[in-house]
Length: 57
Image 1 (cartoon, rainbow, N blue to C red):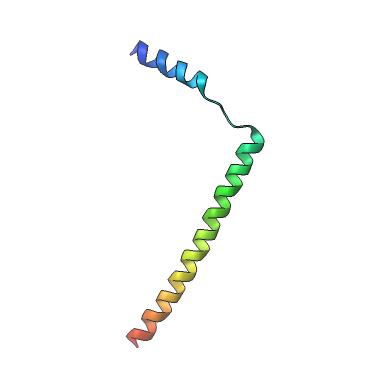
Image 2 (image 1 turned 30 degrees about the vertical axis):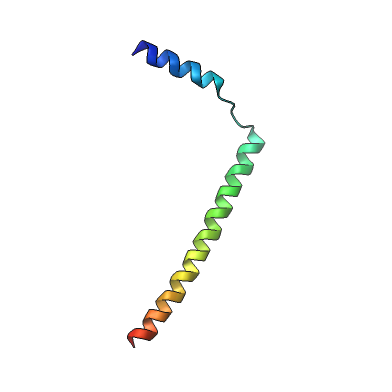
């Protein structure tokens, strides 16, 4: 168990953490993509709901 944590700590020292600017940029990119896909899926849902409503009537 001791070796596991020693090795894990050793690996964490090798990690290159992003800068604050990179982190904010990546976060905003992810949020923008999520919003675009949410709108896209919402529009598709509305279209399919309307088409199914026409078919049922």
